[in-house]
Length: 366
Picture (tube, rainbow, N blue to C red):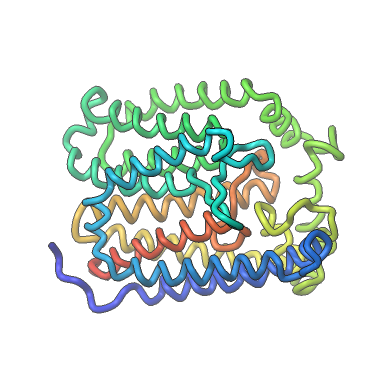
C-alpha cells in the first residue's frame, strides 16, 4: 500500500468548485422564468440543485479521505447493487417514466437514476478486473470477450429504459479503459465495425431516433417538431456574440427552449455570457481533463491509473457529447453537462467520482 500524500490536488479542487459555482448560477438564471410559471417560485430548481450540490460536495470531501483501494475491495458488491437497481427501474410501479424513458426510481420527493451510478460502478469494477487480468486482455476469448460481455449486459439494461445517451457514455468510457489496459488494436478495429453496425441498428429500430438524425441533418424540415430544440439552441447561441446579452438576460429561456436548465443549459450560458463565457467554461473543463490525466499518469499502481482514466474519460465524453448536441455538431441525445445541468443523480455522481479522483491524487507523484 503506497504512502498517503499530505494533501489532495488543490488545483483540481478549485476547478471543481469553480465549475459548480458557475453551474448553480446558470441553473437559477436558466430556470427562473420556467420555475416561476410552473411552481410560482423562481428559485424552485436552484434550491434543489443547491441542496444536491451541498450533499455532493460533502460526499466529495468525505470520499476524498477514503483510501481508493476500498472501492477495489467492494467493486463486485457495488456492481451487483447497480445491476439490481437497473432491473428494478424497469418494473412498473418502481420505475418512473419521464419523457418516454423509465429511468428513475422515486424516493419521497426526490428520485435517483440508476444508470448514472452504473457508469461509476462499471469504472470501479473494470479498473480492478483489468489491473488483475492485464496479461489476459490481449486474448480475445480469455480477456476481452468476458469484459465486453459484462459491459454490454449493462448497456442492454440501460437501453431497455431506453437511455442511449447514458449508455453511450458508459460504453465509450469502458472502451477507453480497455484500450489503455493493453488490448490489441486489431481487436478494436473488428469490434469498431461491429459497434458501428450495432449503433446503426439501434437507431433504425426506433423511429424517434431516426427523426433525431434527420432533424440533425436539416432541423428546418420540422422546425416545430424534432428540429425545434436544436433551432432554439442555435437561436440562443448566435445572439450571444462575443460578450453575451448579460447574465439573466436570455430571451430563449422565455419558453422557447424547453426546460433550459437541463441538457441545453450551455446554450443559455452562451447567450448570456457570450463566446468569452462559453470559452471560460470549456477552459475549466480542459484544465480538469489535464489534472485528471496527470493524476492517472502518476498514480502508484495500475488500478489507480485505470480508475482515474475511467473517471476523467466519463466526464470528458459527457462534456463533448453535450456541447456537440447544443452546438448542432451531433444529433440530440439526453446527456447532461457535468456540474451545470439540473439533476440530482448526475451532479451527485460526478462529485462522488471526483472525490475518488482526489483520493488517488493523494497517492500520485504530482
